[in-house]
Image 1 (tube, rainbow over the protein chains, first blue to last red):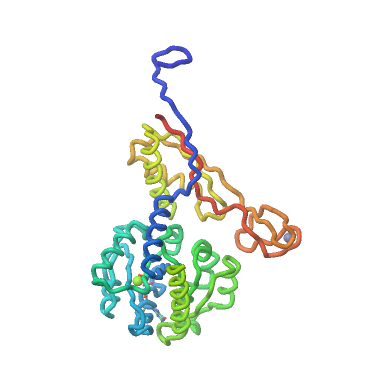
Image 2: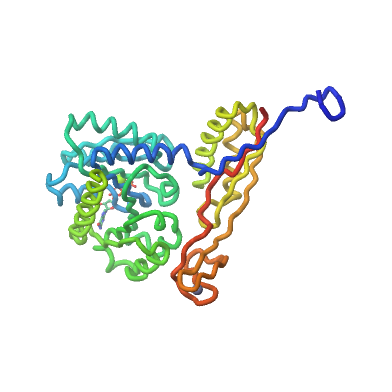
Length: 240
Length: 116
Ligand SMILES: Nc1nc2c(ncn2[C@@H]2O[C@H](COP(=O)(O)OP(=O)(O)OP(=O)(O)O)[C@@H](O)[C@H]2O)c(=O)[nH]1
Ligand SMILES: [Mg+2]
Ligand SMILES: [Zn+2]
């Protein structure tokens, strides 16, 4: 019954609850739990994001070659369908788990948690140094979802064109490293590396930039050095 | 349309909030979205109106969006100013690029009106 006029109209109690939390809090909480777990194990987690075909899996293949067993690696491969990318990694003797999102255009932390436990089964107790997460090919959605990584790396390939940093500012702002891939194709494209570097730095003054080519091997050494430096930082984090 | 991904995340969040507060129904969700969040507010509304239908507890919920402007404070002269320039903002007084962001990246649920 309504208390104002006594009519039979059923008035429900409403209340306003103050929340003031991120829209994506569930994912952020799961991301923090993942990061804590990686920290306890001394694993550096790296989230690779890019448009489809920018060269994420190829970069991982080159990384495996360049490290040549020097560090212990594991890979979580995100794709909408198929486990082709995980096959490419396993073909090089590195444990990999395919995460198929069944339509979703990005990975979320809960899936990383499950994927990591599946990866541990392939490891048989072996300790990991680096955990690579290859996100679903998409330069927009993945930049909204923290996976618990320590380092986010965004790849932009030369054929995609030099306007990408300004068109996808969130990907640049939330990453610590930009890799410009397929530099062997620079002679064939109007792609001003210095302009891209300047745009990226304007959006994110602390971002690092590395220019690589999987064809010529250019920049791979610098990338490996970046990984080793960040792993050292991670191990210091582990032992306070 | 990354707003669909965000709307789906928001649905999970709202279900949790409803459960924690023993709510029967969600009436109004008020969001705070910064100019630099990368979220297009009309698209988010559109996406939420589509995905909410599958969840009876929020199927008639409305969303209200408070847009938060982009505000910086200059490290050189301490001037605080609002800007529409999301790429290359410079201090309105001394033109310095040395700025600290005060607001603009928000992507929060401010409050939720529920029936209990
Ligand atoms: N010329 C040249 N081609 C490259 C280079 N790196 C990758 N490619 C080619 O680009 C194509 C896509 O590479 P992938 O490594 O599969 O790209 P990806 O980012 O993993 O793609 P998705 O997982 O589908 O998003 C392949 O045909 C590669 O051979 C490079 O440095 N130079
Ligand atoms: Mg791939
Ligand atoms: Zn100033």
